Length: 169
Image 1 (cartoon, one colour):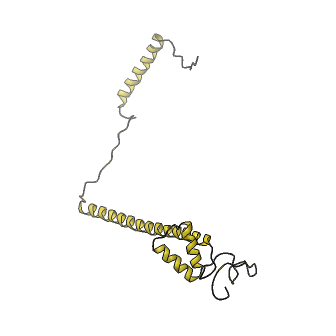
Image 2 (image 1 turned 90 degrees about the vertical axis):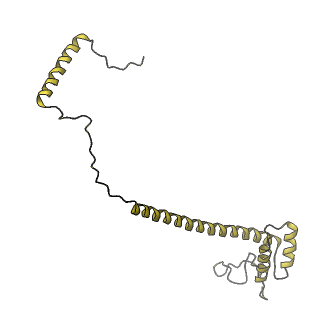
Image 3 (image 1 turned 30 degrees about the vertical axis):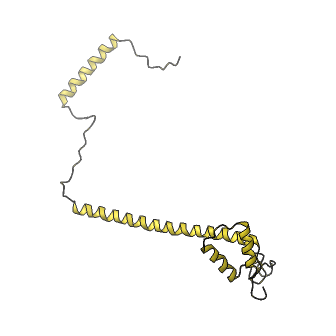
């Protein structure tokens, strides 16, 4: 602390409660401690056993104050951060690949349209009336009305009235 080494300190509430001075309530590893931990991690050590953690923390105590839990949490956090970094890199790579793939599709589709473009005559869409209103001339229309009226008169006499009430009984 006084000799440039980090370790555990008591939190100071003076000056906004930050860790600006030498007083801090959490473990602040020295550069040497971080270097040794990083070297161990790069050498393939990802989840050290309890015995390994004890040995590492006793070796690192030469460079400053440290506890076994600090070593344990350092490895946990370092693994998690590396996983996050790998995910970010792979998602960026996937996004770039997808964008290139989309661009290729669009350019090949445009090329296909340009190469295979054949001028067709303009299409005219015609619709047919389902129920034409003016399909008969005046004399046919009069004949139909007369026939319809005759049918109504004969229907009333031959058949009883239709009961349109609903019965649910």
